[in-house]
Length: 361
Image (cartoon, rainbow, N blue to C red; front, side, top):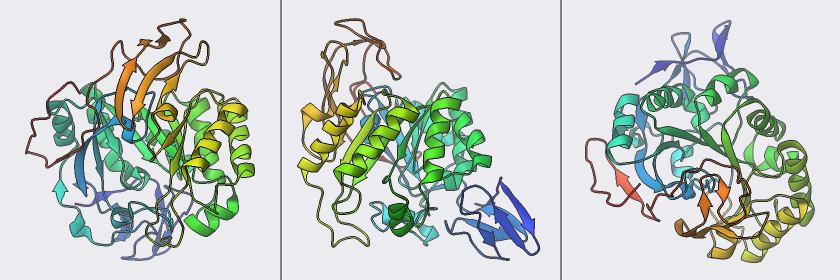
């Protein structure tokens, strides 16, 4: 299905897409860098509207979001294409897809919201590939979800134009922003993009929205894992976003065009987490490794373990709403009186075929 796109104008026989900083000038019957936004008859069209590469019920912690409705289930979906060119992409079969037949599931926004409601999901995540390139579809789903009291999550690299980001994020309840590195050289060489627009998005989220957001930094050996770069990134976060934005340092595994790089050693992630804490970041985590201590949440006031995590499964929970149950210190995030108990299950879903998910989502 195609849908007329927002954020574009004509220049001669080309359409100019202004959704992201690439500002693609697309010739007649051509496509933008992302592949899914096309010049069809002199108008910009989103060619993947209403089509998904698949649906899955996940734990919200997998996004990763540690301070947003802990323990609950989230309905995840993506489409195809991407506006970044990451050589290390770990969802490359989806984000780099040029095969529209990968989009096996078709669903309008109301059907997706109905699926989330019927399966007990508290939120819907736009993920697998960056939802910015299918913003029109994501926004329509988010509008339908908000009417039903279901929250929405954008898992994104944050590479969006100033023109588009206001409308996109006004409909999102939460986001995980992938801050891939803290050097322009890395972004230019390994993602074919630029760092500054991502930093602008992060500042925008913090200072001009109520969106709850967390940051992920995928650490690639020899590319963005130096102690100096980590120190600069943490200092920028503290100065520009504050001490309470959760930061996830996650392990790289060889994939796509970077199979010659080794996996990230656990010691690198643990060192980065310690640097973040010493820089003043109150909630720093590690991901993609087995370390329950460094995946858990602690009160920065009294040191109490607030949320125990083992991968995506919760253990002890010592929050009373948004407060430490031990000392009463407020804890930033979106919490309820009790967590969900979805655990670490991953349940693939075809719309119209409802699994028996069991347990409280």
